[in-house]
Image (cartoon, rainbow, N blue to C red; front, side, top):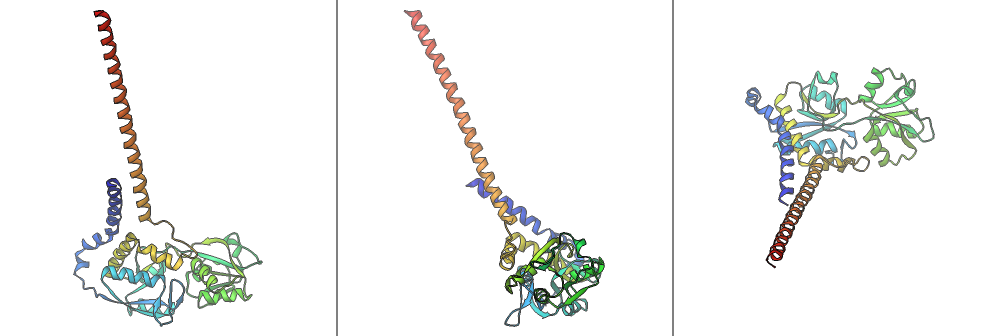
Length: 322
């Protein structure tokens, strides 16, 4: 038991050390420390990007990215007020400095010119959806010239344009609109975020749709929090908060709540540390028992040998005396 506690404690300390690295970098910068950071943040959130971000029945911001940002804000001592709107609107608000941050922005070189990104909190891919029984796709090249539905302003839209995939692009406002349109018999394919597409199709019971082809990396290094370029203070705090939330296991709980139905998070690093500590402890116990047994066996053999030699010597003396 002592060994198990020690091993787990060591693993947990290692995780905490890594979680505080962004904070150490922040603390060493006196220019950042001197700046005054407001503890009340106004954060933008998308109107309809389930389950990453949306507006619930109460008219409040909700979704995976919203709950994750709230968790980070809590550990860092921020108060948060969310401003919900269409993606283009909240993105423009951050560019103009009307809000402090966005919780869900995919990285791109173009966006990096106006935003500063935290470390990615979620890796995402785009997926190709098709009506069952229709043409399937095995590679990106096979999308050439097809009629494809995408969400306007999303990275999937940028991808089709930049890669010159097709000129037949049907723009819609939401993933829900894209999949409903495809399910109704219009266009050839829909290119949407994989997790959002899977959950949306399941929620809307669009049983005539299925995924086809490979996962397509259109979101770069993934989704992260974004702040206005140059806001190093808030950027450092959000990075630190993300590290803490991930190290504590709270991130995995939030992820499974929103995506577990189609993409279970699986074993977290914290759980791996626990299992590794248990396995190592069991191994050390077995090794210790084996060592003690081997030492005890050798000691017993030696004692028996000495006793035998002593008995032989005694018999020899008795024979000599006789």
